[in-house]
Structure formats: C-alpha cells, structure tokens
Image (cartoon, rainbow, N blue to C red; front, side):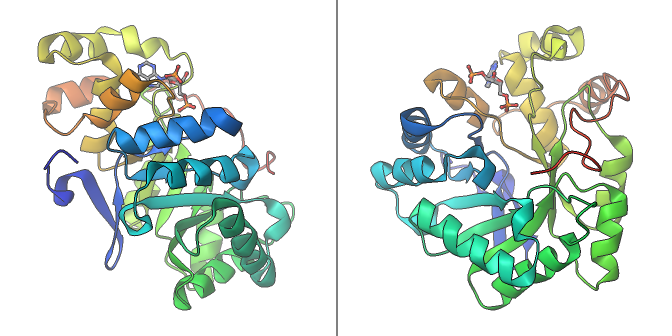
Length: 279
Ligand code: A2P
C-alpha cells in the first residue's frame, strides 16, 4: 500500500496469516456495479475484498477480481455463509459453492455470517471451518455478529475464534463486546464502520481533527478504527471515496482525539439483533 509497511497496514489473524486493516465492503452492490467497484478498488490499491453469500454478488465480485488482472495470492478475499450450511458437511458444501461463484480455489477468510442460535448449530459450523483450515482449503476462519454468549459456546468446544466481524462505528461502539474480544484474543472487524447516515461525521470530535489534519471526516473515523487495531470494511463504489478510505496510514490521531471519538458512544445496540435476526 503505497510503500507503507505491512506491519502497519495489516494485522496478524493467525500464525502466518495477515489481514489488511482496510477492506472494500461490497453490500449492497450487485451485478456490474459490484464488478466495477471491485476492479476499480483493486486499481486504487485495495488488497482486501469482503463479500457474502447473502449479498448475492460473489460471482460479480469474482468477475471484478478477474478483470483487475491481479494475481490471486496478492488479494485477501473474505466471504460468509448462510444458516442453511451450519453443519460440518454443510460448511464444506458452502465452501465449494462460494469458491465456484467467486472463481477461486481457496478463501483467505470464511465466516459464519449469523449465529442463528435458534437453530443451535453454529458450533458445528465453526468446527467445519476449522476442518477447512486444517486441510488448506481456507487460510483462516471467523464469525460475524456473534455476541459474547455465542463466542463462549464456540470456545467451550475447544476452538480459538480468530475474528468476529460486528457493526462498529463511533455511535455504536459496543464496549462490552470489544472488551470480550480483547480479553480472548479475537480480532475485531468493523462493518458499517462509517455508520449509516451517521451524524457523527459532522460532530466536532470528528470534524475538528479533519480540519486540523487536512483529512475528511470519513478518514478520521477510519483512522480511529485502525488505531484501535480494528479491521474496517467501508463500502464505496465512488473512485475518490475509495481512495480516501484507504489513505489512513500516513497520519495519526492523538490519545485525546481518540478519546473524544470514543465518547460519541451512545450505548445503542447494533441495528440487527443476532439472537433473532439471521439468514
Ligand atoms: P458511497 O457508496 O456513495 O460512497 P456501509 O459500509 O455500511 O455499507 O456504508 C457505506 C456508506 O458510507 C455508503 O453510503 C457510502 O456512500 C458511504 N461512504 C463510504 N465512504 C465514504 C466517505 N469517504 N465519505 C462519506 N461517505 C462515505
């Protein structure tokens, strides 16, 4: 990434597997929009693309990767699977179908998209994922939208969870969730890292540093994520916004500036409750 060392732009997920801290989110892009956004993002320097079975855009994302001409090993590709695959054999089938749609033969990261506790099979899904790591089909596994209670059950089965992708922005800071991740060595990845119409982008805690550092409010918020050690996957199909979202490694926020953004936390839970919402 513009000659900035990988030590700075990536985090270690598992031994020997590093994940770029900024990735391109692709929901709700589909078809040509998704293909074009991915090709453009790779040309803009992105090396981490985040998709999901449920976004119905894996084939379009795969096409964007092919059109970019990048060699597969230079890209970090994440996808997620739906509740119907929550069994050891099911996860293997989900892997086969996802890689076929994406036009690749391996995944860098494969996630359980939602725990779906009513179905009660997410631990089996995680065991299936560990099996895919063990046989070299995927480089790493993780989960998404898992609350501490769900994580605890997975850990009780003797599994170390490498990563949990959850909704985090300055107003949805989920401090209890993040503390649990820290305590248990789980890498946090933030989806909707810029919020949805978040009023915080114009709050002085964000707009002040933006003005002082000559950056945009979005860059300040993404820098806040990165400085807290989080992966963030902002979605944009816009050329300029893609570029600015990736350009967050050449400046730093002070502890006071980080604290002021932390203080925007409202205590509001994430938009979707993973005890009841699933797909
Ligand atoms: P756009 O796609 O027009 O760039 P999510 O990550 O939750 O899907 O939300 C992404 C939202 O944030 C989109 O509405 C996207 O708009 C917007 N966005 C992405 N990057 C920026 C940016 N640098 N500045 C302002 N808004 C942004």
